[in-house]
Every structure is written in structure tokens, then in C-alpha cells.
Length: 93
Image (cartoon, rainbow, N blue to C red):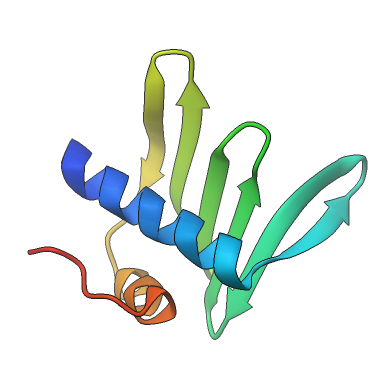
């Protein structure tokens, strides 16, 4: 289980990376922003706020619902440090 505050921090960090360094791509009829660096891949759908983070496999997924954000998947690992480096800031402990 992931702490809500930590999940929000990861989400906001991933969004900041994708907004600063991501590029729009089309997958079928869906248009999304993508960021790739090393083993880290982030897919973000700006219209819905949905974000998926991959590191070989999907490790973090957040969906925006009417009442807020919902973490659909979280697997702790080295990807968190990769995200931290991509964002240029340390994660809170």
C-alpha cells in the first residue's frame, strides 16, 4: 500500500517531468505525452490526467476521478530514483 501524500508527490513529479521534457505522440486515435530516459517511460493523457510510469513493466498508474486521484498500481523500486533524477529534485523521506 502506498501513502497518499507520497503517491501525490510521485504523481506531481511525473507530471512535471512530462510537461517539461515530454513529447506528444499518437497511439491509434489517442494523443498523449511521452517521456523516455533509460528504463523510465512516462505516458500522460493531459485531458484526463491519467499517468502510467513504466520501468520494464508498469510500476505506477494514477487515474483522475471526479473526487480526486486514484492510484491504480504501485510497485516500489529503482524507478523512483530515476524519476527523482529526471525531475531534478529529491523525494521526501
